[in-house]
Length: 305
Image 1 (cartoon, rainbow, N blue to C red):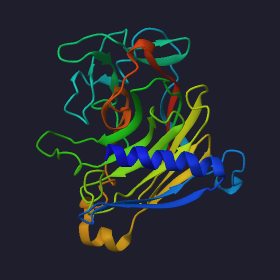
Image 2: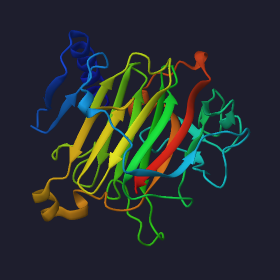
Image 3: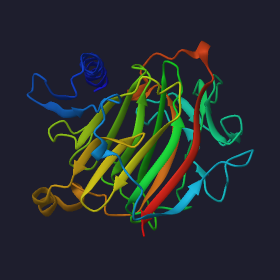
């Protein structure tokens, strides 16, 4: 999977530079298992203005503008803590230390450090709204600047919130919504994905919902807004307001499989983290250039008024 994603990324960059904005890819193995995806690359210098999202008919229901200093607001944010090597072969330990997550100059800083913690050679932070607040549908917008450095894997994503542990399902049955991920091995590449029991990055026999790929040349140099509009029938993903990917619910498949196909009609909580290594971070880490810093200017959640 790692090599497949890497090769797809190379092809995306090639077609982006050639000015081709829609690509169909299919990769088959010897066992005729496959991964296929449609890559829609909306060129920033030639956008379709009809696809620009306007926050009309929505009201702000939750936000963090980071207009304070110190640790992230504990009334809004929780931490996932511990060794995450089991998860996608990541190589960091997550902590709640202020050196790994702090607010300064109007921005949240999530910092990956070359510092040993138990079996891990690096530390970082993973902030969540788990057990604080969750949402079902809405428009989600985060303004952020991605870290630059080989091995960094920043992500802004969502997982299902359960009322109690007895109801909790394991991944991927629970569903996962990736508002945006950044692939540091291809510095400009952004990804937008959905995962479910029937469609996920490990189930090669059933095509993944989709992973949209988008190339943004200043992703590590400037702040960009990453938006997602989510309702009962589809997801739209945006970069700086421009539509870059759309995933629609298939009525026939939903009637047959229900939540196994589309587990997204439930409450989900938000996660912002910076991993090191793993599937997208890759096996090589440029530790001499650490710390890697992901900066977030604001998080805003809107729902229909």
